Length: 531
Ligand SMILES: C[S@@+](CC[C@H](N)C(=O)[O-])C[C@H]1O[C@@H](n2cnc3c(N)ncnc32)[C@H](O)[C@@H]1O
Image (cartoon, rainbow, N blue to C red; front, side, top):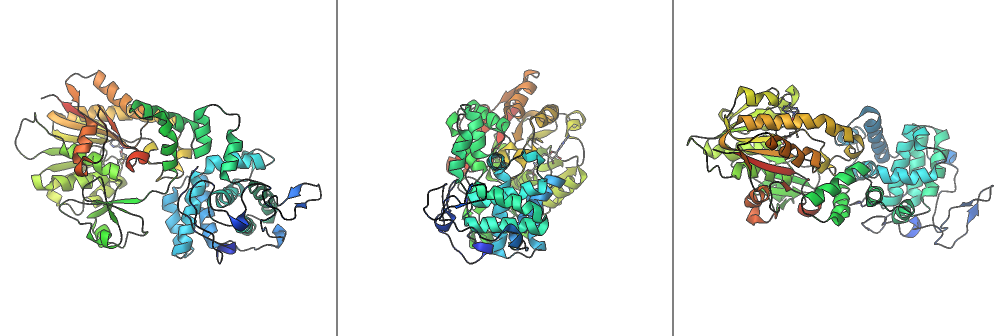
């Protein structure tokens, strides 16, 4: 498993500095120790003769857990609260975290630490639980869930952050004492000491020992559920890539994503963002990437003319807008439809792109509060150029047949292509979700195929590379319907990328990849209704 970034924290989170090292299992040199029994030093044994403090150069606190701090370090407390909310209330970490950071008044440095700890522990949960299962004397599901969350935070600090081992241990035990109780703190202390016996690479070597199934190995190594690894491997092969890329792909899911920005064409600029240190985007026109922290201060963000949007999302929207409608029957301004518009990211970009040509965009969204987000997203675009329809997209084809020149179906999907942005979602998603989504995805695409005018084009898009919600959906829908042709989606994406730099391949569908393109794993099929 790989992690990126890192915040140096000493005991109690302050004072000590460690050399910055990135990569799996890196960073705990010096007092943190690396690997069991490598150092000299005096080895201690407990009353049962078991060796304690293996790797004697470590400096664990000599104090019993009951004598250690009762105060929880605020940054670790924030991470703990978020993990608890994710597990107990089905909360989204990216929504809960900023609120918790504000409530505990963390400064920028502590906020960075809390963010890395929270997201790292959530992403790494699969690997960390496998490590913990080797260190706890009972099945993990018999632990108090709060204790398990605290252990996960401890393991992430020990195995993947540049936190000295003694600080990770003392502070996690202190957190447990303060928020759960003295009893569990002894257990946490004992378990985390066992974890310190190896670094991350050492633990992974132990976990995968004797395994031969590459899916199971990759799942443990990169902390993904096996069914997702299997789906990713299939998708790589289906899109002509080498299956050995799976390691790079899964590692990309574990890296902290940079924020991508887009300036709405004709309405916004990147100037403020670039002045704040954003880098101009390499792939999408009018885009930038920003890793400098809080972007909400930028005036363009407040005005809605500068938006946070993954480059992959920008490119699929631009590909639909840019495709040639050679067989279109009328000469007037085009009618565009965004069938599944909420919260409106692609809607705003499409509306802005179409502005100069007098395009009218209808944005459909069935969920009222999400439809309201679409209206907000469209705020900077003149009102006469768009309409928000609140309704079921499956009805549009029947109610408005052959009415639109370009239709975007950004279908509800598992979101497996954006796991790096939603740290908990890989554990929340289940294969059964695909069963529920499959009919809806087919019905929405069918509705779009009815709603598109002869010569017009439908873009079927998912933020998932899973075959069941991508090519399988498009193949099924087109099998039953003559009169449609699939366009070269890769060529359409290349055509709208800066200098054709994207290199999305060629074929009846295109798949973008985090480890190749630096985007979310967006899927695109372009389907033309024959004139
Ligand atoms: C992947 S999201 C769309 C993201 C959006 N295009 C953007 O770029 O911001 C899918 C959307 O489809 C909506 N949806 C769910 N069921 C739908 C239906 N029956 N008809 C139309 N939209 C639906 C969901 O509420 C959700 O807002």
